[in-house]
Image 1 (cartoon, one colour):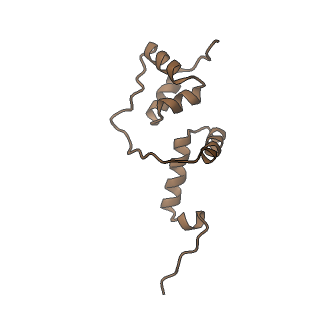
Image 2: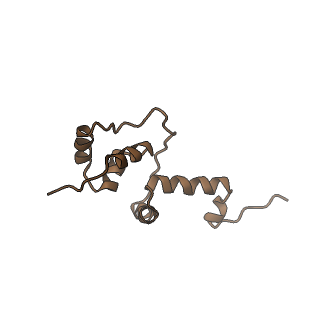
Image 3: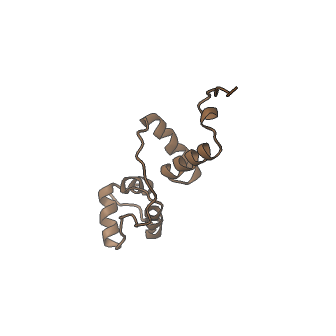
Length: 108
């Protein structure tokens, strides 16, 4: 089975964005093993740089993650980038209650 040729710069960009090896492999259509071998051959480090953002791991139901993947793909961005943008906007614009469709008790 022949693997698609991928521009090495694309892999570097995805690493710089902070994507995991599993996310990168999924984006380029390879297995994690193929990604690691190709990066070794191309002298591309899959290690995240020291300028890492603080990462938090969140449990997301598979169905919800599937929808997030779909929207991210349509937008041409990673799932983590879309999730980050959504959460930033919700917090910055104080939209938590509106997004969750909850009424806030008004202080008298």
